[in-house]
Image (tube, rainbow, N blue to C red; front, side, top):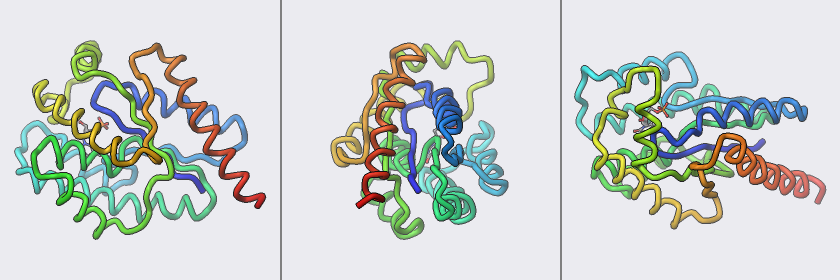
Length: 212
Ligand code: TMP
């Protein structure tokens, strides 16, 4: 049915809001799958553990290919079957994360990374992507208050996170129809309201198309 992805730098709050969105759509009677990347199914979760392990040091392309491998597995075994069944899929991170973090943050180049992603992943792309906008400095402050230990990517310095943020800005400017930006600095309820408004619009548009 509809494929929605959430994107943003670490600490932007998208995971909390994705759970709130799932609950609210469930209550409205929609069939909804909330999933995440890297991960979302057993093998991809194992790849996640390798990628985020602070004791390993993959080169930029190795890191990229691991994210894409996890995504291919998740897409083929979970996302595509769910969409075919008419489920709304909400995915916490997807292709844009690899474009921003590896393509731009790791300096591989968004074009090269996307060429690989397009070859491997095929035609299934998000209908809507919500970008949780918060400055890297504000996000770092939020991360410092987290209870769990930081993973390998979260431990990267502020320059890396600033670069990832800049990478996202390029993706936003090149995909204005698909990527909607929300102000993630607001409190949880206000952020959720912004997301709910955008999602309701796209669901209504989908229903109007079905009526045509
Ligand atoms: P998460 O904390 O949002 O679950 O994501 C784990 C980390 O992996 C996070 O720092 C973002 C990073 N990441 C990439 O670098 N490339 C990707 O393609 C994805 C999906 C995540």
